[in-house]
Amino acid sequence: MYEPSLSTSVMRPSLMTADAPSMADSLPSINFGFDHLRDRMARFTEKFDSFIAKGRKNVLADRNHFRININELQEEQRLKRKDIEMLAQKSSSHAYAIDRETAETAEMHAAIASITQQRDARAQHRDRIRKEIASIKKQIAQRVTAQQQYAKQLDAQAQSNGPELDFWQSYLGMRIEGAGIADRLKFVFTHVDEKNWEREAWFELDMEKREYRVVNLKPKVETDEVERCVERLNESRDLGPFLKGMRELLAATMK
Image 1 (cartoon, helix red, strand yellow):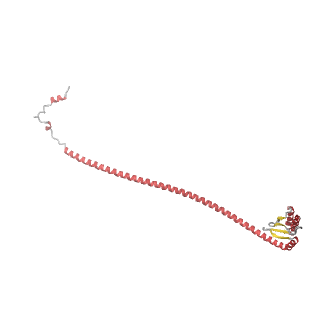
Image 2 (cartoon, one colour):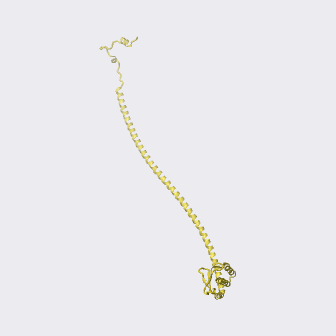
Image 3 (cartoon, helix red, strand yellow):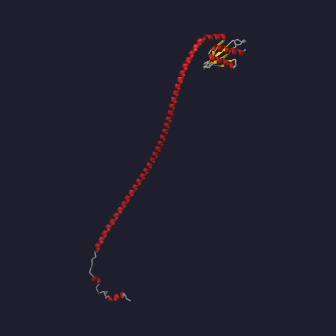
């Protein structure tokens, strides 16, 4: 086998002796510029450290500025959120106010419609009452005219019947009294009872309507006989025979 160390030691001359010159001393000196390189490295390191420090400072400044911006944005967001909540509350209040105003408006329209309907109904009722009043006035005027005409007829009849009535009062022993009711007369007869000339018999004649009728009488007489006398009176309008017939009926009853 080949042994490099042995070969080298055999082939290499014995140069390691103290008196022999060194090979390094025989080599030419070479200046590699380590000092300049070291200086450049030192300046580079200084610039790099300065760059790193400046960059770190800028990063810190940017981070602080970013944090400040974040805080400002968060504060602005908080304020915006608060404004949104206030606006939402105002919007809700406004919507409630609008709903309430809408309801009040609907109620006012309903009230106006009801009042308008009541006004129209009252106007119709007023017109109907006016027509009724006009009709009643017309009827009253007609009745007044008829009553005036009837009063004139009564006056004329009274003037013509006055002497005859006086005759019948004295002849029949009769007097005429008010019955306490309008259009009703009470005819009282005396000397109808042969046993008691002071005893009285009477009847009431209702003249409110055109057809006269006897409503009360004393003593009681048969209704059919009284109605026949009243029918003859309404047909003839002659009071004398009627009074004579009624006296006969009352006298016959008292016998």
